[in-house]
Length: 145
Image (cartoon, rainbow, N blue to C red; front, side, top):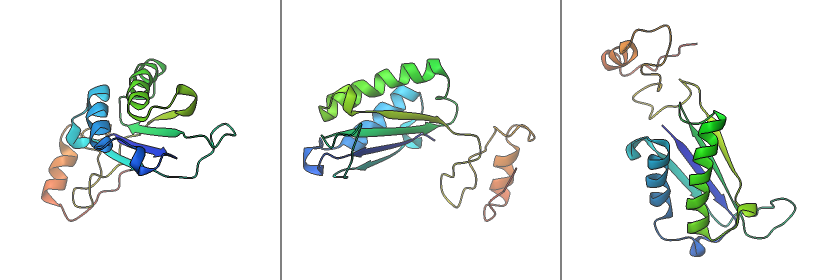
């Protein structure tokens, strides 16, 4: 479940219509995840200072399980996210930093009714065990250290 957070000093009126949806589609393609699992937040008109300058800027935070974290993955993804951001926002590379963060299994929740997004990545559980347990006990949210 990738999370993208775009923060920018650009006012909402300077952002292209449908930017959040375009970022969602781009992230799904770049990260190889279904768009239905991608979460995008766009915050515009923020007071921001980047490298000592209040000139227009934007910063992108990307976090996901299993597709960011290694130097090779981050280099490949960074180049593609950079292309999307510069094309959509019209800002140069010095004004568009980003951060790619690898999430650990079990730190995201799709919603309170479905429990932790551990599914089949906890090493102590056999494949499908958590999903089976959640299906039978959907009112409980498991906590597994």
